Image (cartoon, rainbow, N blue to C red; front, side, top):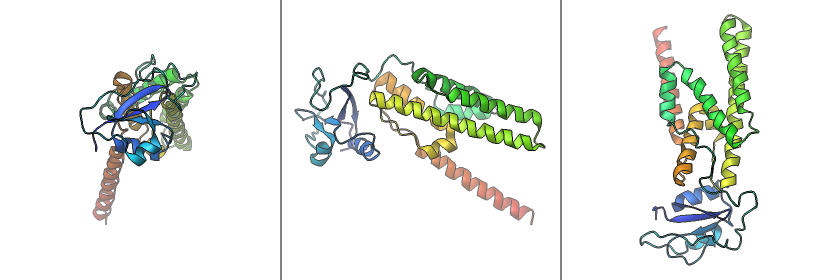
Length: 254
């Protein structure tokens, strides 16, 4: 059954409902362990994830109901002191929620100026959830190197060195943000799966897709799937276009 019916018990809080396919995928990715508690309509009590998936306990087809409360945490779900008071939507500022497609469009329309600004919007929010984050520092130094290369001019070898440093530091900044966001999700029972390869190629836009997902969760408590496939589809299209352009150029200058 693909209807969202499954609730998860994490750190003394209830999260859901989700589809069974989503829960199974999170378990395979290691975001959920076998002891995570699950509930769906028709069940009397919460059961561990491994038993739930094995027996598909209580699979009902009626109207969806609410799971048992955690007024008294069930066995195996004693909250840690550090996260006992953390709710699905706590007092952390809502993440930047502009859709990644708009970020991409505005970046193109403004010739990259919006992208430069939005990088710091993202890193500033990450600094609020993780004061130890060095992402903003990486971005500042990287952007300064990139702009300095513009003053040096492309005829100088220093130009290419500065641009390389710019790219490396920006990527480091985004991986730093990724680490902070993963810790943020782990502390709140929010599965966060940020692919390193996708982040490397689509830094700004892929990160914005993740932040929009987190912002929606902060406002509603609903966990949506993180965007990833769309970026690889775009990448494939760009590769095909590049191949077509190269072939056309070769034919033109033969």
